[in-house]
Image (cartoon, rainbow, N blue to C red):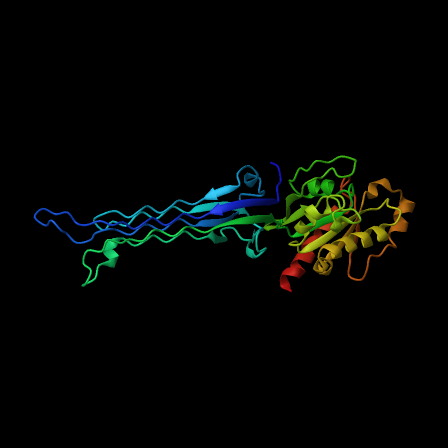
Length: 332
């Protein structure tokens, strides 16, 4: 399924039904009293988070949504039927904004979270509502009010416990395919991954967590270079960041600094998240080269793992560190 993480939609709530002018017509009572019923209220438009969805693809093909109008009132004091609501289902983690004001209407994180984004119009009063002791045969009724309408922007931010961050071809897709059931496209050239991938890691009995493979970043990503601005938003909800850096890089520490700067340029709070460094593709090293890598440090409190997703070397240790970091995060 194609991954779409942004969409624009127009929504229109239902109009309220009109009240009516009507009088009782009974045998032997030629001039009965007013019995015009009220109009029904229009339906609302709601947005609801659904855990079964993981893309906003449906909204690419249909942009306009309407709730049902309320029915008009009828004689014999019959109120018109209320219009049915229209419910738009979106993935968990979707932000809903008003495009005109840029107001954040809702952040729908949990399954079942919902918000009314357009309220239905009120039904108008029928003439029975206007009868008084001095005006026993009113010939007035109210029209229904129009339903609200607005244009909305949906923005999906993936909900993941761990985010894999790195340059293109650093081995993120290979790693997520090894530690989870996710099956991303893997090839030996940059920008193989063009959409975020989400995988569930079955760490131990009764213990699991989600990992997001974010498409490769390049220097200047937060300014729109490469594919950066399309995907940096998906890192914002992660609890722990794992930086995948090729061990065969000429300067792994410089690579790490560039990645940190890109995260800071997008959102400074990202750099405050717990961090783990994984030096990848260690299967390409001989013993003497491996010894030189052991001296590398990426800052106080940042554990470093030298792994090979292909051979499985130290991948288990990396998973242990991910779980321990998540456990520490949850107890803070």
